[in-house]
Image 1 (cartoon, rainbow, N blue to C red):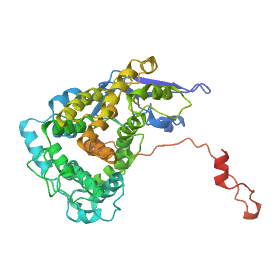
Image 2 (image 1 turned 90 degrees about the horizontal axis):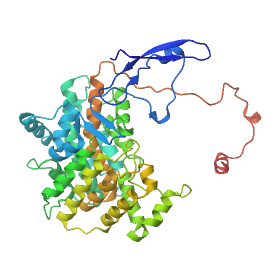
Image 3 (image 1 turned 135 degrees about the vertical axis):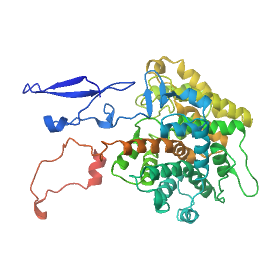
Image 4 (image 1 turned 90 degrees about the vertical axis):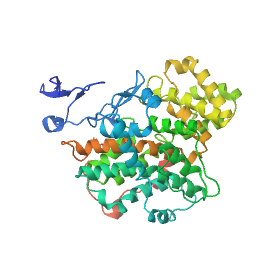
Amino acid sequence: MSTDTFTLTDNQTGASWTFPVVAGTQGPDAIDIRTLYAETGYLTLDPGFSSTASCASAITFIDGDKGILQYRGYDIRDLAEHATFLEVAYALLYGDLPNLEEKRKFEKDITHHTMVHEQIHSFFRGFRRDAHPMAVMCGVVGALSAFYHDSLDIRDSRQREISAHRLIAKIPTLAAMSLKYMLGQPFVYPRNDLNYAENFLRMCFSVPAEDYRASAAMARAMDKILILHADHEQNASTSTVRLAGSSQANPFACIASGIASLWGPAHGGANQAVLNMLQEIGHVKNISTFLAKAKDKDDPFRLMGFGHRVYKNYDPRAAVLKSSCDAVLDELGVADPLLDLARELERIALEDEYFIDRKLFPNVDFYSGIILKALGFPSEMFTVLFAVARTVGWISQWKEMVEQPDHRIGRPRQVYIGQTCRPVLPLAERPQRKPQAIRQQEG
C-alpha cells in the first residue's frame, strides 16, 4: 500500500476527506475509495468504468499509449516468438513461465483432461443443427458443472486447480464438437500424442474417411492466435467472469458467463466484422470510396479492425499476426484476394492524415480473421476460437480473485434518475396514452 493520499473537498460545506492511494508497479496509481460513500454520502459515476479499477491484479499489464501488452511481466511479442500457448497458460495461472519439469507435468495434466464425458455427446443433440456455435458453447460449458461434481468447491485449492485444468483442456474439445455439430459431421476424439494446437485443429478438420495433420506453420499460427488472445486485463468478458465469481458461483458457470459476454459483436465478434467489411469493399479499386464513407460522420459505415478502446498506438498483437498471416498463406499456397485487399487498405489508411491524426492503427482483429479463414474455419467459429484462447485468462483472473483474502461479492451502485415516490391511481383514473410501440417510434 502506498503512503500517498488524496484529499477530496466539498466546495459547499468545506468538509474534506482523505483517501489512500494504491500504487501500481506499472501504469497509473489508484485512489482507494472503498469508504467514500460511508464517509461522504457520495457515490462516483463512471459509465463504462473507463476510470474505475475494479480490482488489483498481477496478471496482465497494458499501456495503450505505448502499445504495450504484458502477461506476468513478459512482453507479448517475446511470448509469441519464444513460448507455446500452454507455457503462457502456465504463466497466467501460476505467475512464471514453467521450467522444463513444470512444463512437462502441466502439458501432461492438460492433455489427459481433453476428453469430455460421453454423455455430453448426447447433450449436443438437444440443439438445432443451425444453432450458432456460441449459443451451443454457452450451454455446454455451463453444463460441465453437472458432469464434474468433484471439483466445484471453490474453497479447496486443489479442486480449483483441477477445474482450471479441465476448462483449459476441454474447451477446445467442446469448440471442435460445436463446429462438427454445425457441419453435420461426427465428433472427433482428442489424441494425446499431439500438442494443444495440433490436437485442436485435428478435432476440427479430421473426418473418419480421412485423418488430418496440421502443418508446422498452421499449428504455430493457431498457437500464436491463442497466445495473443489469452488475456487482456479487465475487459467486458473478464469483468463478467469476475463478477459472476464474486458470488461464489462454480468456475464452469463463471466461464460460461464470460462466453456469453464475449459473444457481443462489440467484443469478441470484431474479427468476423473485419472479414464482412472486406467482403463488402470487394476490390482494391473500391477502397477510396469506403475510406470516404468511414470519414463521413453521417454515414453508418465503420472501418472495422482499426483503432482500439485501449490501444492509442499500434496494437502489438497485430504486428505478430501480420507475419503469421504471410507464413500460413504461403504454406497453404493460398492467393486470397481478401489478404491483398487488407494489405492495401492498411497501407492507404496508414498514409491518410485522418487516420494518422486519430491514431486509428490496425488491431489484432484486422489479420486474425483472414488467418482463421485460411485455416478453414467458417466465420461463425471466430468468436468461439476467441473463447478457446481467453478461457485461460478468465480462469486465471477468477483464480486470482478467489484467492484474494479481501474479495467480496460485486455490487455496483447507481445514481437513480427515475420518478420520485408517487401514488398508485385506480385503473379508471390513470391517464390515457398512446401504445408504447407508437411512442417509441415517435421518439
